[in-house]
View 1: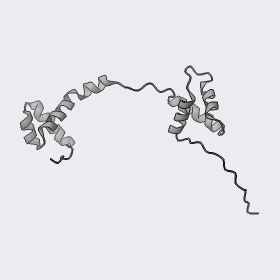
View 2: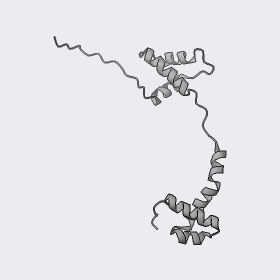
View 3: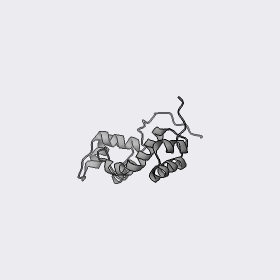
View 4: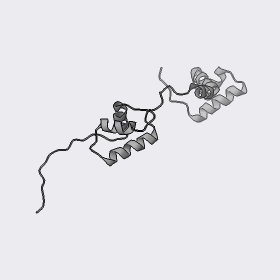
Length: 128
């Protein structure tokens, strides 16, 4: 059996309204022209979705370098572009309440779009 296209917001609203008015699952499915499983899924998500989302919270650990730390790290990089990750880590840990590892600093630099480059020795050409 082929999967139908996803329900539009109008169809979802029709399902919620028809079910809230007291219609059965089968009547609602015939009214909206969709499957019974879709009716159950949409109505269940409407009933319990907001409560579950509020209770869910976050699963991640708090970030070691927040937005303010990223701005500080960017200033350190702009001040001296030839610094290593270990030197940047030492600058970040200097006077900080929470120390960060060099791996965290390196990962943050990569997320900020700052990649390491190596200078290439090439002959200097002039137009003289």
